[in-house]
Image (cartoon, rainbow over all chains, first blue to last red):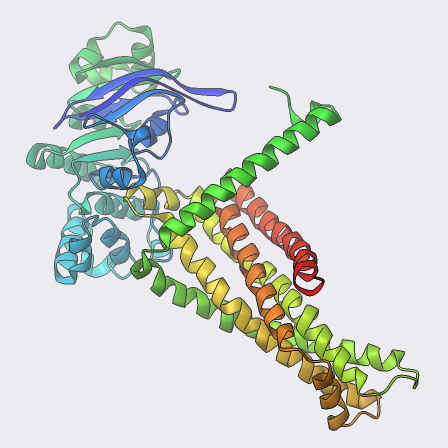
Length: 251
Length: 263
């Protein structure tokens, strides 16, 4: 279970998180929505310990992330896959080597036949052909392909949690659907717990069990997609109307 | 919050002191992290070999060229200043000592500060702003053992090696050049070079190059790791790495000379 308790974070004079309370139960997929610059990615980075809160607690499986020692944090991170917004692939490594780094278990990493099979499996899961892309370098891939390889890397180590930072932004509708389907499959078939930061409200409603809206550094609403649609909260209505128009959802 | 341009001089000084102290603290933490990455030899060794090749082979031509010219100019200027009252063999002493004690290690370090320091800061800075370093951390892997240790160790190995070659090239060029302007024989030059020669001079040259290697690679990696604000930040880190490590090289040069030669 992932839990954020009254998390505050500011960068200089800019308050990014202003008392975030948020909980994700095991097996759930939660979509974190919100306008740009409201701290959605910062929230994800708190969970994996890339950013520490100024105050408050970030608990993963009951462990306070900011208080973990170096090795404990590395162990925790090996149970979390993180899909970066722009893929964050290593320029100097091929696709194969990039995805291989996702094998956080050292024995699996060093077992080359196993690694080859697992890497090919993960690349196929994101709708790409391992025979075509394995030897390519990130610079030879399109933005969407880099993003999908980033997802393959994040899931290679069979993590318990996957944090998706805008996994479908910049992808065409076909590949967006494939990624949404993958997120749902990982949750339904393998029980992976997911948090998905996204602007794609339709995708979020299709894949997530619960949806949360972050605005002005606080979670202003969390609930099922249905509860979200029926919400009378002004900020929720404003968010839905601004992007898509509430009536189109109802339809 | 007050903008830096609206601060009075005392406030600016205070802010500069705070920034400086913060950098010292973060640099110390960075070095500690680097030492923590050292036991992971399996990870950094292959990358270190690549970096060592890049530093050594990639820099050899420019290092030999510049040290050769420096040796030649030193010899020619020595020839210009000779009035006949000083024995000619002294030119061998002057060229050899000035190259080994000063020009070889310092010029090599300044060349590498520009060539390798800029490259490391730009590479790591780009990795920082494109979240590649965050990605490495998110995979439970140590950025120190993957990115910093190979570069720093390669610098510590290749910098002394390049300095030895720079010294040899500088002395050889000086030897050839001085024969063109003064009636110095090979025997004179060798006699001068050997008569004031102390094995400690060679060690001093290597010790200096070792310190210079640390100042170039550690500063460049630190600057790259702490890059912010996209492409502009990468540019700032790169410039900062070259300027800071060049100043540090010159400061270390004075300090080491005082400590090692003037006891």
